[in-house]
Amino acid sequence: MPKFLEGQLTAKGLRFAIVVSRFNSLVTQRLLEGALDALRRHDADEDAITVAWTPGSFEIPLIAQKFAKSGKFDAVICLGCIIRGDTPHFEYVANETAKGIAQVMLDIGVPVIFGVVTSENLEQALERAGGKAGNRGFDAAMTAMEMANLLKKIETEEKLQS
Ligand code: INI
Image (cartoon, rainbow, N blue to C red; front, side, top):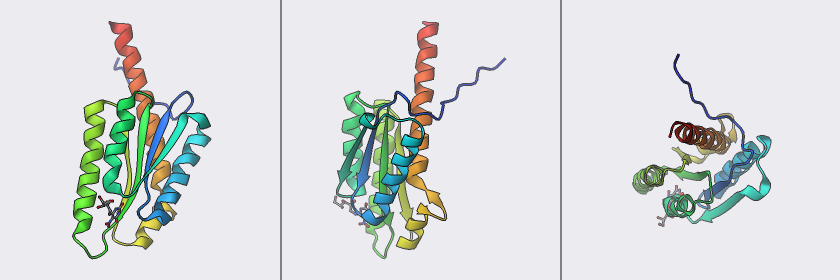
């Protein structure tokens, strides 16, 4: 019989850090509201949520690293909005942000969730921040809960077997 491990969708007893970028704050403010809504609806303790604002998405990985390393959080949720516009800057910011977030997660072993919207224009970004395409902030918080609970479950299994 295979053993299936799955993370529950509850925020109860978990501590979260949210790193949110001020750049394109019309969008990121809504992503933050979505993330907080998901955590609250899934029984998060208000005092267990810390929110930090960075200037842009490019700065998110450093702050995520600081939180992940602290040992004070079960997951770090990264929220940003990068809009292509008509400058090559987009590629640099988007690539480095995604790479940085992934690197922090793997280096430290804490779930660091990619809730960064990348889009062609503002309209598309707003669609993903509470518009017709849902809210990526809400989704990121759901992923954070699931991953944090999955890791806890795996760690419990490991202790039982040792
Ligand atoms: N930062 C964003 O979060 N989104 C963007 O669309 C963006 N664009 O297009 O430039 C952006 N740039 C700023 C960047 O994140 C840094 O804050 C800046 O380069 C200083 O390091």
